[in-house]
Length: 254
Length: 90
Image (cartoon, rainbow over all chains, first blue to last red; front, side):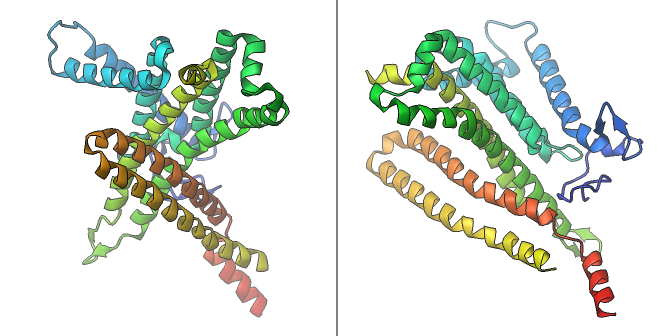
């Protein structure tokens, strides 16, 4: 139940189904060991599951929806409201992007609670990848909507004579603190939940010697709540940053 | 040896971060509960804002929990330390 077989780092984690594949533990496939392939395989599983589920659920859409279609319509409408609250008039093209971010991160976070699965978001690489996507979308949309000069003026702040103070601050914020905090928030929360559950499972006693006692149950509730909230916060902040780059927030105040 | 002793002390000293988190979250919930009592019809929106604020404050403490997990991974295993002590005694 330690870093199942690898042993190079000693972060406590539960084993996953990839550890059941009969391959020697230190063999290298395309430059990554078997333990390092686990988040990629789990991400791919989440993507395949979501794709198959969407394709099956949207076959033969009816005007008066049956059960599954009605549930999915509630989800999509909720996401659309969520994005419109943040982004106002430019929300249209971004509803699929922010909605996909939310559903994908939610499924990835929840995968850790299924036995023999492992959350890809409990690995820093996955969250940095998601953050990089949001980073590039933010700056591309900012430059596309305001032009390069307009975007630099927007980063220089409102009273233009304060620019030597405000511009380096904004630059540091956009380049360093925002991407780092966005990725570390998701990574820290999910890895913390998974590690605490693994530690509690290791500590839980056996009643009468053979009945296992689930001492990690309160931590599982915390993990379920935290996973949902972190998925929502990631997509909320992503839409907030994109709206900020396009300039929606200044429009509202004037 | 002193290095590992100080590392062990550092791992447990990081828990002081929970102090600031408790204060911050208490102030956030205080503000939320006050405004929900003044305007019960806005309770849904205020609850949403409260949850978002709580998650931000909590993530700061979770950064320090991560630090302590990472440092805990650098501590040596018990068997290695006992072997070292036995060699030193002889």
